[in-house]
Length: 523
Image (cartoon, rainbow, N blue to C red; front, side, top):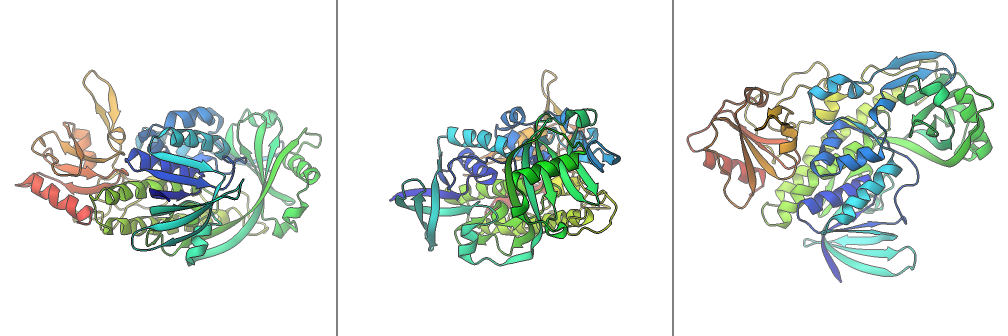
């Protein structure tokens, strides 16, 4: 019987990211995926800047950008009656604007899921500690106090194999077999609206090249649909929303009907169109009541299903496993207590609920749930959710409060104020290296515990079994952004969130740091 520390079920972006992150933390894993290969439909496309920070910190960013679309192709969001007809509105989303570089050295990226997954698979397979196995389906599992027993089936031969794992990550999607087997209660609304994604080959540049956008929303009395930019040339998605309200069913979307709908949406009756694929789906807005079930952890769509309005599904899932991987690694290495694993639910589930609720609110504001006569467009927060992208602020046993209040913001959805208050993301600050080269604090964190100390913080030193890399930074902008004096220090977790802060140096700095790390690790 094969034994592995972590079994990952699901080979989409979340499962593949989990494999990469565990390998980077020095943990062996086995990923199983029932399909023969990576995605064949574009599905998710938007990777926000926070997720791209994760990929940057783990050496994947450049390959994702090479596989994706250059930023100059996606600077706008456009609403029109038809693609060739009257334009109703256009916006420059915050995340595509110049102001986004003030909070991160990393920009967002548009990379369709069928282009993204091969990149992640390649990186996962190149890691010596990660095994990736397609055509392998989880048939059943059982767990006890020591681990998980899983039965796997080769989908080609039918041959079965029993695997023993210490932990299981369920990243097996919205129809998660693991979640259903556990009988998990879901909080929220299921099946809120239905849609069809049509993948097409058509040259739409005559109506798009002069106004490059990620999304072209079509709003007219007979059709509510969206052209989704994939390569900005001849490969596009065409999304038809709210089928039931228009009297459609998924069966109505024959190739001939799809071609006609695309032509109607384009406003070009003789547009040459080739249909490459049709994928009906139903949007839900619900979240698992509990993310941790003994030795099984739900992540991605298995933990939260949300409407795609805002593009948060894939991003939330990748950030789930970014939160979980380092915790599993420390527990498996005997450096942390089991209580640390409870903090995965405590931190990610409330955030998952908040993001899901906001994604649903976006959908409602865009008329996704009905065919009423609402004006075309979306609420102002749509695609301007910098507070949701960067403003996650955890409260759990893995965070040591410093007694300071949260930074007030007028709108937590749109507004983000960088702060190193424990629980928040370690802020981006440009630092000057010897020789004049600039480096961001984002590039100093993200793969192991890091202590960022002020210019007079040489007395801070990280001892003990937990490896903590220390950077002494004599920079006034850094000290101001992190809310410390020049003798203070901030401890940043492997997921880039601030775990602890000492505004000034105490009489015994290393005792204070040791006490904080023991609390964080549940020892």
